[in-house]
Length: 254
Ligand SMILES: Nc1ncnc2c1ncn2[C@@H]1O[C@H](COP(=O)(O)OP(=O)(O)OP(=O)(O)O)[C@@H](O)[C@H]1O
Ligand SMILES: [Mg+2]
View 1 (cartoon, protein in one colour):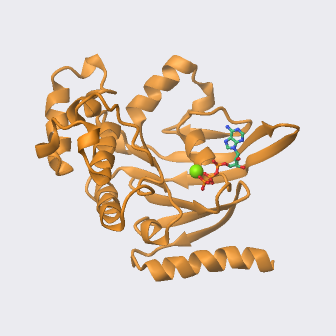
View 2 (tube, helix red, strand yellow; view 1 turned 30 degrees about the horizontal axis):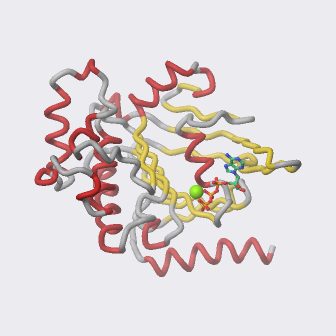
View 3 (cartoon, protein in one colour; view 1 turned 60 degrees about the vertical axis):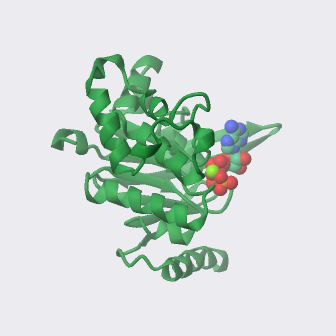
């Protein structure tokens, strides 16, 4: 990435998102704020229903927020109409989900190419080759998703998210469907994208041994910021698990 591409901070400022469920309102996000600097790896943890996926979707501009703002590289997402927002998302963000969301009838390589705009021209060929090599998937390029393991499918989904060279990668439980060995490989890969390529990553996870790969952990509770944990690069799952439990426990006592 060039320096200008990588210099894209992400600011979430006091974001509110309320859903109507029957006669009651659910405050999925109730004033969450978070800044992610270029080259930072941030994990989001919190109990089920605490608003993690909603926050990620708000960061991606996939949902309209009811209050506050999401600003990426100085651009407030709410100011963009649908078409410009789609292009802005394509140029700045890569998104990875737990369920991979690959197209079953397409080969691995064709899945990776899918988001690339025509304007990329022949450059897309070289980029696909580089991504397949970087992810150790060159031998699997003609396989369809059904003939790939879960970890391999997730690597293809990550390659697809990177095809337009986004500065920021958003991942919702990217290891949630994987065994621990494949999950660790995905974590190592995400860490390398930050360390070697200076991308920013925001990753939702339930698991301390996944969150430990991040630089810091933002803990949500009931749609609000509960705490922030600095991992200090120790990568010790027990320490992260203890700190996370203390965070939740501290709140219960308070
Ligand atoms: N489209 C929707 N319509 C109505 N309510 C929703 C919708 N999306 C999320 N919610 C509600 O908002 C709250 C937060 O949901 P969210 O999916 O962000 O939680 P989460 O932290 O990602 O949980 P999990 O760990 O189970 O994935 C939940 O109470 C959920 O039921
Ligand atoms: Mg979720």
